[in-house]
Length: 142
Ligand code: FES
Image: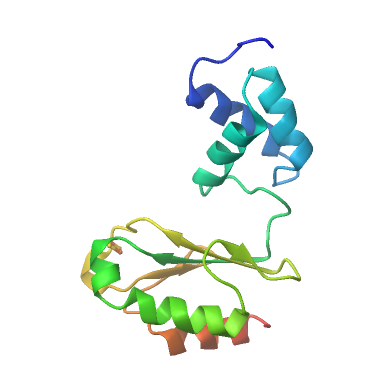
């Protein structure tokens, strides 16, 4: 096994390069990067799933991210998570069976004063309620 990379930053660059063009990382991409950098595929998978700009598996049509940092957590994120989970039938970190919706937690979005905050397809929803987010999901074609 070669040991081309010494840091996760090198692996991150390799993953970004592998993702470029098609917009997601396949299992083969993960294994190829692991082999190239002398790492276990599970290590590379951990790196790939840690960073939100990387997508393992086909990129979903929609991404819902609920801020789970302190202010949003204290400000009612759990109610939003519960409502979205019920609407989509999935939990945090999961994708709907049709591959259309990815639902995940994210770190502070820098708008702690308007907690809880949710990001849907890159659009920030401030003072979010479960009902708001569910309506947006339905409007987007759920
Ligand atoms: S804690 Fe959620 S935006 Fe800062």
